[in-house]
Length: 64
Image (cartoon, rainbow, N blue to C red):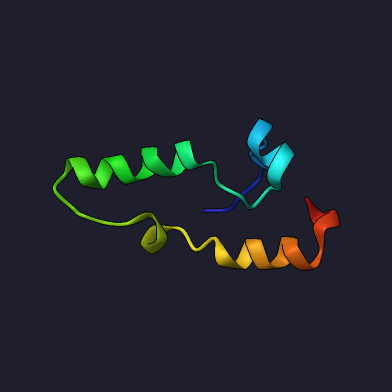
């Protein structure tokens, strides 16, 4: 299989305000809800490593 179509990045009001690699709390909560509903107890920081984007944006705020 070959990828033949280029797709734009997922841009929302949140990513426009906070940078492309950030995740809104509401979206993180929705992603946690699915495994929780299946009986899997997991914390957001186990699924989303937000320290790297935070560090990058802190060092280079113009990337936001």
